[in-house]
Length: 422
Image (tube, rainbow, N blue to C red; front, top):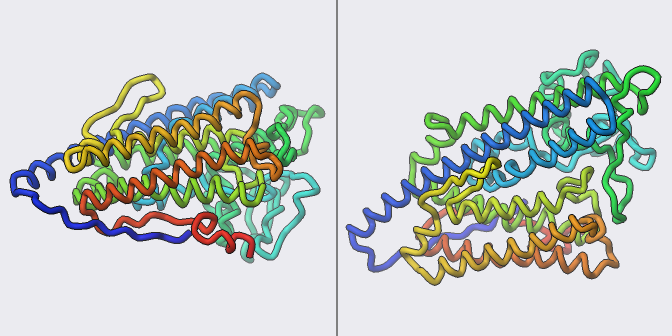
């Protein structure tokens, strides 16, 4: 992705006393932001632990009901996690870690069996159809790998991004998603993946082969997700490195907040996750493509951006975490700009909410991407346009707060559309 740089302009007419008060406000804003980050990762961890319980139940007692329960737990776990994505782009600790838990898209043939239409190895990825679940041993980069037992260490140490290929996603939410739903082979028609529960059955009832190893992989990936979430949660605790890095330099901390808001809004969500899929009419570009949960993914990403600006987050137990906010800082400088930013965020959430409501009523995100589906494309583009529009106001906030070095991620789908088809 490209980065688009915006530099702040000097604020005029600021007295020494006003500047001092403004600096104190920044400290409070950063502390609240760190508190919200900690709460979101705590909730992500708690819901992942519920996912683990459901996965363990499925493996111990395979059934259609237990597979449905594990799928529901996965979808629930995405609600707090997606709201945490706004901490990316501006916080180096999060960026360095995030690929372990939410990397996409993935070449699912690395993990398990796939439909014949998927194809085999490619020049770009010789491991695209490795199927580690079916192979207790294989060669990787000239080294023989013992995969007789599928463990978190195997997934993290040998398989994830193997051979330096980003599509070799062996860990995280989307690997788990694939193991619960299987491939979605319906294209732009309604319906998600429909892996049978018997893929985890024992004995002669097993379908897809290697049911015990498939269960091992699912449990290993879930255990690893939990340990990764434990780690990042600790980084935002009272003495955590992410919190300390944020609070060490107030202007750099505020810059990190706005970088995350702008980059998630523009290049990542509006561009790579929404506009690109619409341009290609390709459901493989969906963020949660196996489960058809993309409408929720988009909605909660958008909500995460709004959370940061307003300085509030509603936890999964209903508790409100709130405090000093970017909105407070902006309102001190320019009340009209604060009102504009709030209005733009609300408009985006209404647009993303319409996508969510339509999908929940049976008009799935897959269908919205179809080339001849004008109503669906209009819904998606309303979300894209809202995200772009709110990014323009984020740029104005950067200038109002006199910040330098805010780098907002771009996307060819927005900045150079012809390059998408080259």
